[in-house]
Image (tube, rainbow, N blue to C red; front, side):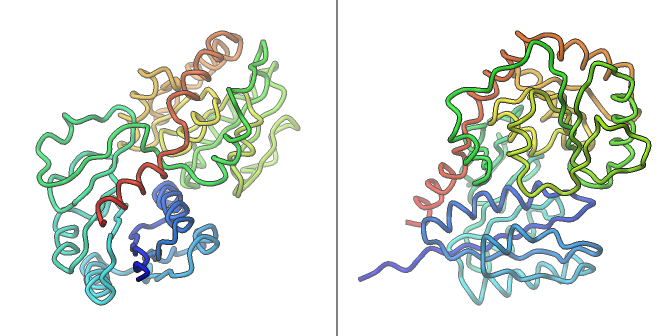
Amino acid sequence: MRRKAPSVVFRTNASSSIGMGHLNRCISIAEEMVTRGWMVSFVVRRAKREDPYGRLRSTVKHILELPAAMDKRKDLRSMTCLVSDTRPDLTIVDSYEVGEDYLKALQRAGSSTVFIDDLAKIRSGADLILNYNVGFGPKDYSKVKDARLLLGLKYCPLGKLVLSQRARMSRPFSQPAVAKELLVTLGASKHNRTFENILRTLGRLDWLKKVQVTSVRPSPRYDSRFSFKGYVKDLPALIQKTPLAITAGGSTCYQLACLGVPSLIYILAKNQQRIAEGLDASGLGVNLGPANPFNGEGLLETLSDLAQDQRMRERMAKTAFGAVDGLGARRIVDVMERMIA
C-alpha cells in the first residue's frame, strides 16, 4: 500500500519593509520538500504595494494570501482553521510577529510545529526550533521545553540557485591582488538612505572600477562605474562574479559565505547585531557596525584595507566556503521526515 505523501503548511511574510529573508529561507526548505514529494502549502500576507511572491509561485501550487491589513487575532483564527481542516504533518512558522501562544494554538489544532528563529525568545509551543545563525548555541535555548533544536551553520537553508552555483565550485574563486570590483546588496527597499550613504562614500574612491548595486538608481549623479540592477532574480549569479561585497546582517550573508565571497556587514536592525558579530568573530565577514549613524570614514578605511589585502580576502573566502556548504535544507528535511515517520 502506497504511503500518503507528507504534508506541510508554511506561515511567513515578505514585503519591501520586512525584506525577503523569511520567505526565501522557507522557499529553500520547500524546494527540497517538493523534490521529495511533499505536499507543500504556504500562507502569506498580501503586501500592500508590491507582489513579492513570484519565486514562491514558481515553487509551490498551494498559496493562501491573507489580507494585508488582517490583525493577529484573525490571522491565528485563519491558521488554526486551516490546520484543523487539513491536518498537515507539520506547520512551519517564520515570523517575528508570532509568539508562544500562536504556536501552542497550532499544536492544539492538530499539527506538530516548527519555528524558524533568529532571536532565541521562544521557550515553548514548538516541537522543533531551527536557528542556524552563527553566534547562537545551546545556552541560548537552555529554558526551552519539549522541543528539538537544530542549531548551527550546517542547517543553513539555501536555495537551488545558490546550490547550482556552488556545484560548479571546488573552492572559492581566486582573489585579485586588489579588489577593484564590488557588490552592494542590502535587502529591503526601506534602506534606500543607507544605500545612498554607502554609494556616495564609494564614489570618493578613485581606484574602484566597478560597483554593482541591487537597487534602482536613486539619482542620476552616479558615474559609469555604478551599475544599478534593481530587483535581481538570480542574486547568486551576481555574487559569484564579485571579489568583495557590502551587505546587511541578514540571509544574504550566508549566500555570500557559501559562494566564498568576503563581505563587509552593516547592522540595519536589532536582530542583525548578533549575526554580524558572530560572522566577524568566525572570520566569515567584517562587522561594520550599525549603519545609523553612518560612518563614512570608517567604511573607507575598512574597505580600502581589505580590498588591498589579498591574503586576508583569500583567508575569509576559504573560511566562509568551508563553513556554509549549502546543504542545510537537505539536513533539515531529513530531520523532519524522521519526526513524522
